[in-house]
Image (cartoon, rainbow over all chains, first blue to last red; front, side, top):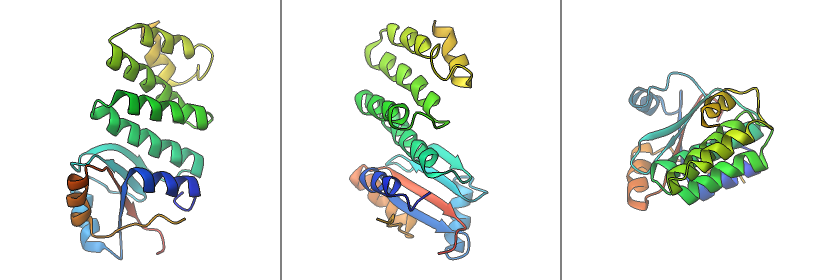
Length: 149
Length: 32
């Protein structure tokens, strides 16, 4: 996951990366594992600047799927900060650059939510529901968006 | 380019607040 150059570049540009290793950082692993309820490895958390968890990934993923999760995590942080344009740009990046990942339909869903939060225009939700009729039709996210149609 | 992970988590969290920058925190058991 981590050696992929796209991953390392995205991390360097968007996060301060920190690691606690189960053996080499045993005390911190115990301390922060308890603080963030991390009971399995790998567990990767996207924390906002206040140290609040905004996204969690547990278990290994191939590079494309991992990168998609990292971008989604960064987008969720922008969303929480109500930086709608930044969030929408990141959510779009997931399904435009990594359309075959499991994360892509989730990103499409949240793009619609973000556009709605930004504008107050429910058209954004209807358009998102419509988009799910032509792609990612058999996903949970399509079901969630179906109420907007 | 490898990810330059830091292990001083307490300081990282302090810097994140100062710089208003998000953090990736990796709980790992991978060989180092």
